[in-house]
Length: 509
Image (cartoon, rainbow, N blue to C red; front, side, top):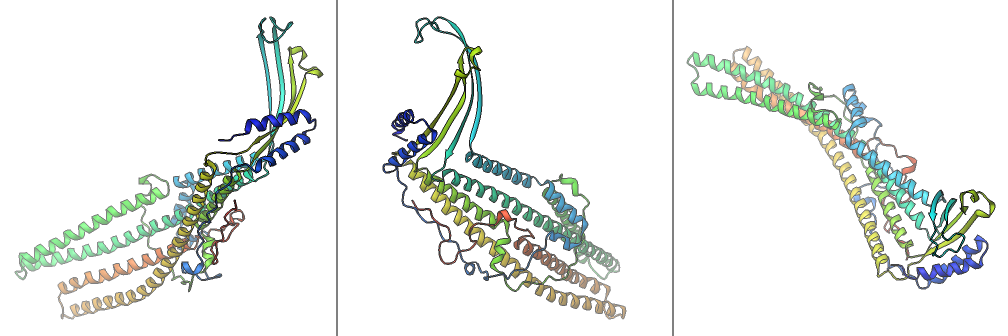
């Protein structure tokens, strides 16, 4: 509630009646504004937002110590089909279209906040016919007559932003727009990584299916051999039943892999914004890549490459602008309105020089007593700022953990691959020696067939580790920003990390 507005308006009219120049009216209105400052509502004591974390709290090193992620990094797989799927997803995934719409809305709000700072000009025209009462307020010859009247008017207004209310609103809108722009970039980076992971997962299922088919063939050979041994009276029906069970189990494994493959194709099609059946028949081979060099440490510069981190930082700017706007509401609001035009009783007189009209009127609004509404609004905006800083801290922690987890996984998987290669080589050598013993008559065919599943298990473990290593490389690339280049307009006006003090300035009341 604003009281004293009517009295202020009355005083302005009295001053305006004695002032002939618009500048004099403005000076009078400004003087009246200052006279009310002593009695206006005052802001509450400000609560400073929480401090930002420092690099050591996140497990990052100071300075530049992070390897660069390549632009369009999925090209490293040298797979045209994967390139096509990523481009398809980036062009038509519905979630990206939603993010683009949010960015367009934020840009429109920024344009609206910017327009408020400029002059507003409008034109109006009107014409009417009226029968005037013979016993009304107007005297003859108008009383009792029928007259036409018309008007042409050009009016304008300008907001005199002495206390930064409109500037704060623009700052908040710009922060929200740039946060939406960074959100869109983060969504694109994440989507490309998800497509690559889905593609690699489909390749893993294909490799598993190949090994499962080898196992099925081995079990079928074992069944045939057991049937011969049962016919010869060497084995019993128990061995035959066990061999038949193994064959059925192998077939069930293949059916399960077929189901997983179909679901993986559907999930990949969804990421690409396509129908579920669009990728039926897609059967990628497992890519072979050299082991990527593992960064020795991750530096604080990692955070400046991630779009999600910059989006959270711009949300702090947006909420800080909202707090400045709430503080500016405690101070007077002064607008200057003027008009010029033609107004006449009788259309034939409209364009005559005596029909001209013009005027200027400053308008003042001043909060004197509002029952604590503005202070409650201020506390709400301070809480929003604290929440934005806390959310930003959470994004920083998640980004650092994601990068460090990917780094640890990649280093460990490379060591596991080296050990697994030794295990596979030993299993293949043992199986080869057993076959040689079979050829020499020192082992039976059944013993050779019984040793083959252990070899297939080792090969499957190698496939798993190879695919996990590739996925860890994708995860690390994504954690390093996915090759995203920060546009100049998204460079944050404040620091990304703290330095032992609070870098987010709390506005003074």
